[in-house]
Amino acid sequence: MAARRPPSKSQARREQMSAAVNFPLDWLEERSGLVGGIKYFLFRKVPGDTNWMQTLGSATLTAFIVQAVTGVILAMYYKPTPEAAYSSIQNITDHVTMGWLVRGMHKWGASVFIILMFLHMGRVFLFGAYKYPRELNWIVGVLLLAMGMLEGFTGYLLPWDQTAYWASVVGINLNGTAPFLGPWLAQFLRGGQEIGAETLTRFYSLHMLVIPGAIAGLIVLHLYLIIRLGVTSPPWSAEAAGEEWEDEAPTELRAGLTRAGSGGAAS
Amino acid sequence: MDPAEPDQPHVPAPTIGPVGFAIGVVVILVGLIVNPVWISTIGVVIAVIFAFVWARESTSELRGRRAAVEPEVRPAEAEPAAAAEATASPDSAERFPRSKFLEASTLGLGAVIGGVVTVPVAGFAVLPAFLGQKRHEVDLGPVSEITEGQWYIATFMTDPAEGETSRRTAFIRNNGSVKSGSTQVPSFTIISNRCAHLGCPVQANGPTGAILGLKDVVEVTKNGKITMTPTVPAGFGCPCHGGQYDTEGNRTAGPPVRALDRYSFDIRNGRLTLLSTFSVSQVDGTGAQAQIHAYKLAGPGQHVDGLEQILYPLQPPHH
Image 1 (cartoon, rainbow over the protein chains, first blue to last red):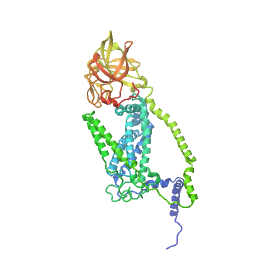
Image 2 (image 1 turned 180 degrees about the horizontal axis):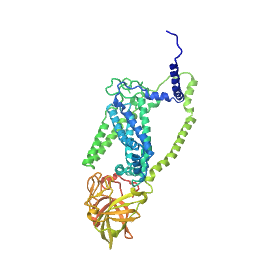
Image 3 (image 1 turned 60 degrees about the vertical axis):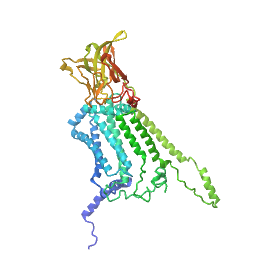
Image 4 (image 1 turned 90 degrees about the vertical axis):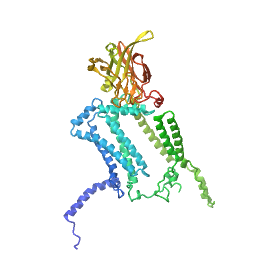
């Protein structure tokens, strides 16, 4: 047909646009490799017949992110002192613009987070996705579940109303009945011999700094293991799970650490 | 994994250890209900034996004899120089090279810095909960205001500086005076309202206050506004999990593990003063004649007598 025509005006504009979009990405990629890293994280090989049930983990992560974001906003208005805690909660609910919504999201989202964790755990159990080589990820998941429950326990006190106060009294004393160290654990949680201002600030710190930090770290570990080990095929899958992985010959370094029966070291 | 069968995950061969251990645990739990002393002890013995067997089994590969491997033998060749080097090098090589020293000292210094930061911070987080726990004495006002034989629900603040969170409640009855040796001493029954199950507020089972046609006794002392509401209790009951007590604080029903705690008291300048709280396993008799089996204050839900008291050998400092 005709010889190469010079690029039309629209084509030239499109090229200009794509160069403009790509330039910052290229700049970033060249200096950090982040674009490639994100691609590696998101565009992974997944068994062809994965199931909607396998989105429960992502749903749990989303619920945690909602809790983190709404929690940060609530912390801007909440006052962790016995005199001001309840009135600051009332202020958030009644006067701060959209405060009722953010508090409601945090309150109900807490239950959603816990429920989703259990559903996710049930899915992993029923799909047998906790089996070799994914045992460690199950263990990390159990720790995450425990941390989530601790979030619930410490967050429940913060409204500082009668329900919150007496539920925490019962909860702390329940810990106190554990043999040997129980009484010490209870006194540590109370921050003294009685529930009071010390308990409230302590629970506040645990609830918004210590435990969320631990959860974030454990989530990173959880996701790292998923990326390393791959998504499990459903039990009815024709594809063998983890087929894409080459068997890795154990190195000298590992030889002493693994069981003698697990191959490698002896062979 | 066996290279010949890559699909077979390595699982330990089925053994008796875990099964026996599980049976032992079941026997312990059944024994806790049926007969804690004998059956549970048997369960503990079974569990310990099989736990040991299990540990032996699962570490047998690690402890087992090393596979006998024939040492590799090579006929001594010529090339004496190389042979000399080979024999000499293990001895002449640096046994503790500089790089190892630097590595160890970097890690060690890091650990020291980490410790210097962490130890005070951890102490700051943990110690204040245990050190300097104050005992609060509570002034409840003149004894003359408290009618003999009448029960009162007294509320007071143990530490007004702490505010309403330090408000506590006690049930008080003036038992009149009893003979102690040659002198007459006043007797009070002062029961803490903290439930011995999990610490909820116990309430008086009976008519209270205005319905009796009696007025509250109100005092203002160093412990804030003190209200003493007359009541005629048939006993005390906990709203949380249904624990019930008689008027001496003995458990009559429900989950509590002991009787209600009591306050020790003193009369100072004619004023009733609460000193500290102590725990009670059981009270025999009533009023001024009561035999109180007293123990050091323990948390709710903790046994102070019987076999279970060995579960709580050390109490943190509190009053």
